Structures are given as C-alpha cells and as structure tokens.
Length: 263
Image 1 (cartoon, one colour):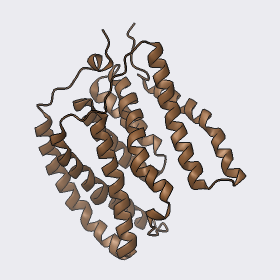
Image 2: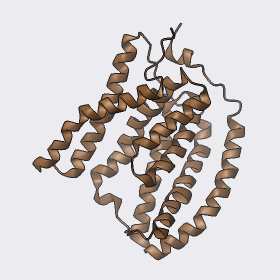
Image 3: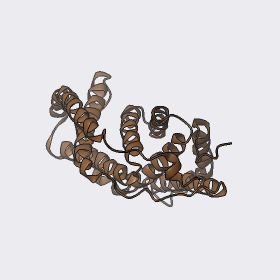
Image 4: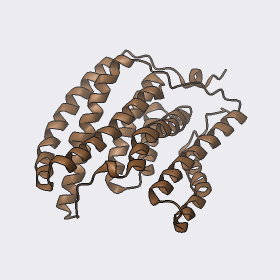
C-alpha cells in the first residue's frame, strides 16, 4: 500500500479542516468575555486554526516516516516579475471590479473603508496569511494530493478547498482562480517560496487599492473605473498568461516521490 503524504485525499483534507475547527472553537468564547477585541480574537482564531492543521499533518507524516523537505527555497526566480504582474492585474483589474459591479447590480450597500484602521487584520492579511496559507494549502494539501491524484485533479481539488476556506461568497471565486494559479506554479517549481511572495503581492495589492479608493475616490468613480478595468484586464491577463505559459514549458517538474524523500 502506497504511503502517501497526508492529507492525500479530499476527505482527509476536509477532515483535517473539521478537526482543526473543533479544536480552535474554544477561542470564540474569548470574544464573549469582552476582555479582548474582535480583531484580536479573529486573528488569534486564524493563527491557531492554521497551526493546528500544520501540526496534525506534521505528526501524521512523521509517524508514516515521510521525510519533509524544505520547500521555501525560491526556484526559477526569473519568472516572478511576470507572475506578480499577472496576479496584480487579476486582483486589482478583475476580481475587485467584478465584485464591486456585482454589488452595484444587486443594489447592496457599498462603503469605501480604510483598511489601515483595522491594523491587526491588515498585518495578518499581508504577513501571516501568505506564509501560513501557502504552507498548508500548497505545501501540505496540494503536496499530498499530488501523491495520490493526477496533477490536474490535485490542483483543481486543492483550489476548490482553498476557495471554500475563504467562506465569503465574494471571495470564493477569486480564491479558487488564485488557487489554480498558485497550484500550477507549485506543481512546476515545488517551491512555496514563490507562492508566498505572490500571495503577499496579491493581498497587498487589494489592500493598497482599497486605501487609494478610500483616500482619493468616491463610489461613482470606483464604479466607472471598474467598468473599464474589467475588459482591459481580461485582455492583459490572456496575453501575459500565454507568455508565462510559454516560458514555463521548459521548467522541469520534480516528482512527488523525490520531494517527499521516499524510496
């Protein structure tokens, strides 16, 4: 029987998330005591949840005697500028504008907020999230899936779970697309160092855009810009993704057996 990297199936990954939620849930009661702010509780909840997932996976794989190699190293750094440009255009020119236009069409109440006001959540989004989420979703879940599924299925399944993790309906579809992109990059390079950098850029670009909107624009201006951004971004993404795909064709994909250090 093949001793796969854990979690290696969708059910194992969902089970890991469910167990981590149960073990993390007591932290929610801190909010009722009013001893700490909701900001601190949510950030603490997030950190503990991710650390529990990483810890369980580490212990299971250690028991299976699977060698966990370091994947933070940055391979093929020459492709990062093109990857970064692609992710910025997607976040700033496509994901945010589509969400904004959707809310306008649904007649939802929209307000421009200053992300810097929620400092703890902001720091969590641009510092903790890129590191923790890449370790668990690409370095653990996708890595396990690659030891059991075909690369295509592994990337799709891990991206769907990554989207589910974000919960908010307006974030799910964008997270799935980003998960597919990051999954492809991880499969090609076996480096979460690159995806951590790109995840930071993705989150920072959204927060920076929100700050600029809050500081210099009104809702009507944002709506007008969004209408123009969407078609332009579609074209740019198509051109850049084709170029990146061509450049990445010669990148040798490392087998999952070599990555896990198995005989």
